[in-house]
Length: 292
Ligand code: SF4
Figure (cartoon, rainbow, N blue to C red):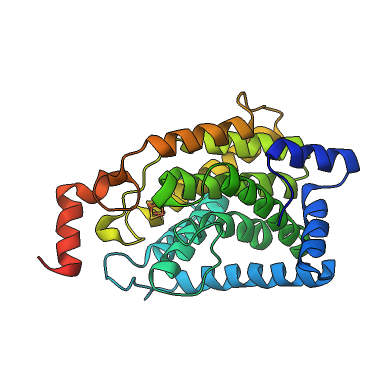
């Protein structure tokens, strides 16, 4: 088990040793799992390659979800990105395609890495596979940043929540955006406290997001929410790297996330009883899948 109960403790530990967050987390994990750091690293690298494969799978033209409600979004976005005319530019548009692809791969029961959950599985690969494939970062740096993402995720899970059924979508896509923002910041050479700032800003930007999956399936709005999480992660990492600080520290954002999650009604916690799931179209789509 990770020994950090707060993000501030994690940052303090990294700053004290002068190491990156990922370095101390890898060492801690090796000790707690009774494995060598190399074995722990290799397992994480395997997860990264699963992420890369899930991007490819989800970008196939014929990709469709089991329900038939969604499919092909990763393919369409990739085609559009490659035309070089998108508003976001080729790099971000391809990253969007990757997030859509992995979330679509999940909806078609493909193999993904839940990071932290299946519903939010496109955000971290959308960010990291893009740095690896389009910016030429070394695989080792990318894989190491996944330890940083994981460490933030563990604190989030302990101090707030990573389950839509408990805390709403802020706990799934919000957590994934926070984890990805921290990982991106580390890969780009940011300090541990910049990683915490990036995470805090990403969490603050998703606070209050409800969980309202149409027909109770992790497709609508989940697949596209992975895109907003990815965009928030990139922008918050860039803000932190530019020297912009989070005004509310990450741990306090987590406490706020828990409080907001606790006050959400059950209809907005994965029950498909409210929000988009309860719109006329949401109800029609549910009937399309399950009948009357
Ligand atoms: S809406 Fe709910 S099921 Fe969908 S990704 Fe968000 S938390 Fe998960």
